[in-house]
Length: 151
Ligand SMILES: [Zn+2]
Image 1 (cartoon, rainbow, N blue to C red):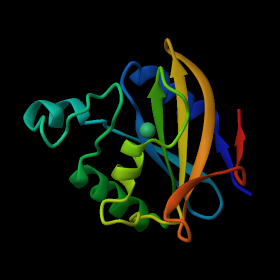
Image 2 (image 1 turned 30 degrees about the horizontal axis):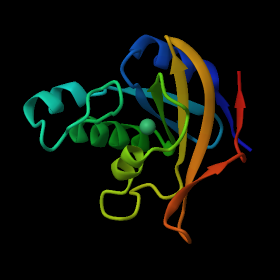
Image 3 (image 1 turned 120 degrees about the horizontal axis):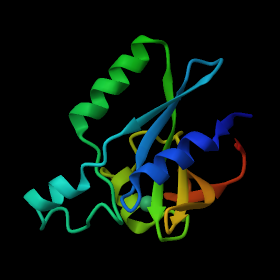
């Protein structure tokens, strides 16, 4: 059982409001590490509105170069990615169609074992948190209760 610190996710969601926040959680087997990522959604939306129709209030995009660099760094430190988290400003904590698209670029997720934590934040105040994981039998993301979220 892994205990994920809700405070870090809550603070990132509050500081990013009304935009979505996005980050990853890694582990070295002993402890967890939290890495916030930049949500570049508004920049890519401005540049390519046809490809990125959504604004940062309802979507996130992570810069591939920034992400790959971070993954390389953390694996050098002996850490591996166990979870993604992101916020839903003024929406419920559910795994949306946009989320599914973002995580299943080639039909299946790049990190099939990762937990996906979604935090709802309303009027800048953290609401509820839910966790999802890829189900390779149904090709969908199911809500999971396996992981303990500590306050
Ligand atoms: Zn989402």
